Image (cartoon, rainbow, N blue to C red; front, side, top):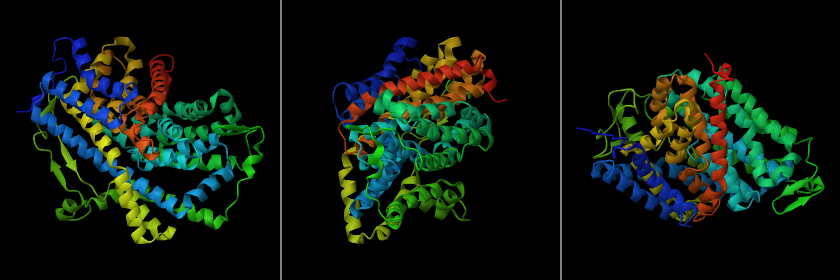
Length: 556
């Protein structure tokens, strides 16, 4: 008999909510204010989550332990595998000297760090989010910013802030597709609704990122470039989401934004050159960078072209079907390509109940899929393998670089495993729903808080897709009970959730790992947390207005 969630185990919504919040408070408190490392804080939060799940919410102890193991495995694969593959490719480029050439080519467009952040963190990051998602944009963008001369902490924070507006359409629209399946709403309608919300933030986020880095005066110095970068992405995001669906929104938008900004910078320069630690009143430094031959620049960038093509191909449904053996007549290929294991003591042992689901009882499945061929990390690793002969690195040396990369990431991978173990215990114990139900008690003001529920879900799980799977049904049930438009409220779960991406523990650890600032996750969290809350509140305000004076923006 499955154990059913109890969303108010203490008979008091207030005390049950406070109990459910303990693991999150322990994690964030120790990370941000006590100076603990990410791994220490995650293990303490995991311990608290297990204690609350078993001791307060009544979850069977063996199921809670199995949930922690399931989460840890998911943290190592596919999330950890993406980081290992991305950092391997990055270190190959460093070894061959390609990274220095790339840096000079970017500085050839502009040596200004504000403009480089727009090109790398926002435009290229948006493309990577659309093609791969799941940590790849933050890891790769942060590493490239570091290579371009940004301070390590600054590179991590900028990559996190930039990785917001594109997230709802990430991994070829996976969050939107998941939300449609969970809520029963039309996928194209959700995509269109998101396309009537996120373009505003695609304009705001590049300006917000530059203002965070260089201040108000620094932002004013490059506002035309910010408008070109964000405006191009916003226009493409609106058109693609509204008229073509969710799958290619970020891929097309990221490429369009990157090309538009690169072309714009061929004839426009800021009046003053801004770099960390210096401001030059003349932009002449822009043209003082040594120019490499076009052939060498193309050589240096090709590994990242390989990566872009690989992650895009790996994300296409037809390629994924082939890699997972679904296009063969026998199940043997699928069993080898995607060995799947029902998690003992957890699969089928837990059940959601109303109001977290529209069904009388929804059995939670727990199956670990080791899709080693179709995983996004494998696509990145394939790009790295192709890059080895291209960069002229001997195979033996490349193998040593890979092993050294894995060794250097051991502690980071352990941290990610602990973070995901905490997230899975929270999910399977139902404490996440208890936290969400606290926001549904806001009555007529719920339209403002609906995006904050999605924000909470992403902060807890590290994934807009997981947040939509977790809270999608709850959002629809609540909207129908309060007489609000289910399409607007359910979509707000995803569009508000993207603002939580910069503070989820997984992304924080990924950014710290990519920039070599492991053990300084608390510093990064303190830097980005206010921006995350402010942007989520702005999304809440927009959704609230769309229930009233801006109701005309909601598609039929």
